[in-house]
Length: 357
Image 1 (cartoon, one colour):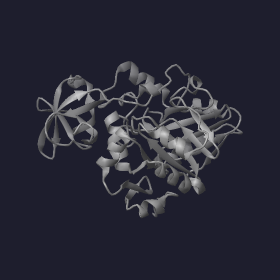
Image 2: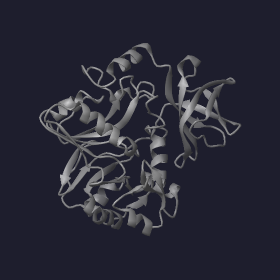
Image 3: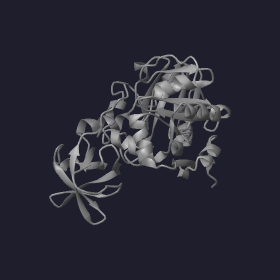
């Protein structure tokens, strides 16, 4: 199957980006200079990511927000129009179909931003159960998404976008045709821009001209792992529930209905059989996904994400640890890195301080 390309594809090619398939799209993984330099730019200055592969689903119709609130986990009643919310689309057994951002425009209008690989499935599920008058429109290729992240992100946007209002965390506003939201997946002060595809090049050029360093998905992964943010398909999945992944904060437990509620309430009450923990390497080596975790010679879990932390200059990982193992925060475990034991401390993410608020 042919890969989809971002409206910014030609710019990535011109910049010498390394491109690779991701969620059915050809996306930049890094640019000349490398992932560590891009990661550091976001932590210390400002970077811009093309994340146009993310899905975009528009819902319209009487009571659209109430309908979505009865489907997805987080409680939309806790936010107001002009705010966004991290939420989950779960299956009946509590497994996670996808994690996504919901933009609440009003009681009859929302924009959902799921992951690229799951966008069609989320759209299918919502459309199948939608009440009369509520429509689900796939705008996946109509809109580009740029993430401007880092301590200087506001200064860059002030130079690139006229008349941008101050925004609280998880609030959004429309600046002409550009929807600007104070969100991101890096742990830094940042913004995500939803831009009509035809205008994406102009906005990208303005952001880069204002000083943002182009960054690829490699740096996005190291940044989100340092924060302990889950990646669907690794740390959240059809087989990994939000209770196991420590994402229960994204569940409106008091809501009367959402997909998977019965299974998740039961699992929460009983206690999960495994929990997602952070692992901080105390020896030399880098843990990667799908590596065995052991304590006192016994297998107690497996890594779900793992990388070298450019900020800490050591290996870090997220891992599902069996609760029956007795392994606690502060304990030492070992990760089997290609036949060599790497000692790690069990910690609670984030691995580095968050600056999102």
